[in-house]
Image (cartoon, rainbow, N blue to C red; front, side):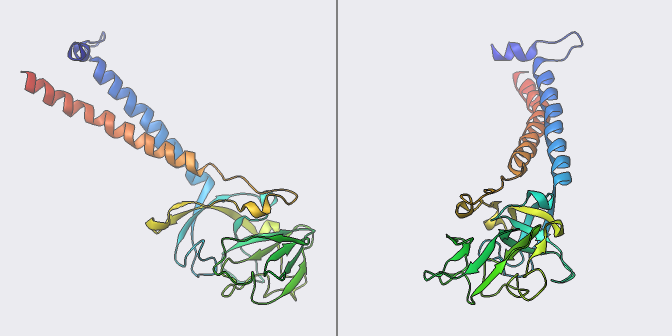
Length: 242
């Protein structure tokens, strides 16, 4: 039954199989190219040169960061930013406080607090206190307070506490929000939003469309390869029947 179906032709002598394979290639091209182009417009790759964000992001790792406005940033987000006070190169840190917050460390249990609320941070490099040095900072309106996950080795807002903005950076200094690790291969994956910040006003942000874009590219590649392989396979079967 299947062999007779394969031999059915349209008005131009094409078999049903060849029509379907051509359709698969066409749809695959749309998914592959569309997903690739859309992803290139929304995302940028960055290399994290230090271990200030380990173990979440190891030194030398490549990350994919979605281009977003600073107004979209929420507590818990890992952001790429550039601020003249901090240096000339883009930096990657985690947002722990936004405008109007009071960020302090540490409680008797060694926890960071935001507006007096203790924050559990399971992503930290060590099981010790959330910061080896105590601090307290009021975050000005329109600013972000940033810390690395490796608190013993991160040069972050704590180093700039004596600056005019209490160590914070303006929201418009943010260029992108990190959604996933792309390299090395053993660390590839989406980064989860910390649940500890979800209960605070404003909640946490939602991941960008990176995962469906990757699925679209992979599905497109499978359809292209499958459709392209139909012709040689069909000819080989035809020769076998002959």
